Length: 214
Image (cartoon, rainbow, N blue to C red):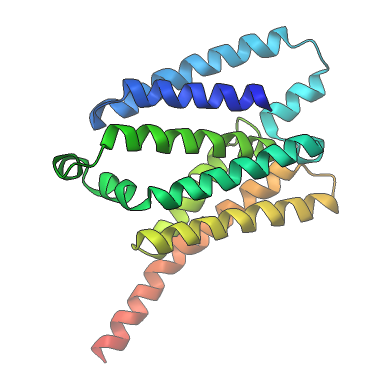
């Protein structure tokens, strides 16, 4: 757990330092991700334990989390939530218009690095559930779903957390009564939420327009 957290934080620092400009960030993320996958292949090859433990790293195994890991995860979650609350306004400003935010005195580079560090801590937590390969399920899908529901940053954040909790808790409960891995249920529930909102939002918007015109 400590190694995972250390690697995630180091990666966040590298991306935050190299991706100074907006147009550079996508390429930096791609380059670092490719290098990280190469290191992952090397480490799995050198891994001295059983293949089932390597499988849990790739696809998650929430039942293998120890009490010490759980305490560390809770501390990380509290720090991340408090950090996001403290930097919510400058982070939102820098996200919407980084050039104007920088002109108004917002330390965009520092805010970006701090956000990446908190994201790294979140990644270290989510890996315990869905694994490294399926981490995008809890990083992107809830946010993409919330974006379809509301344009308000605060409400979108709450909706994203709600979708992630639904997918995670629902996946764990379903895995307890079946032999299917938790990660499958988590990804399926998250994808189902996205598809439901993606197809239902246009229909809801049309009905609102018809009601307003009537």
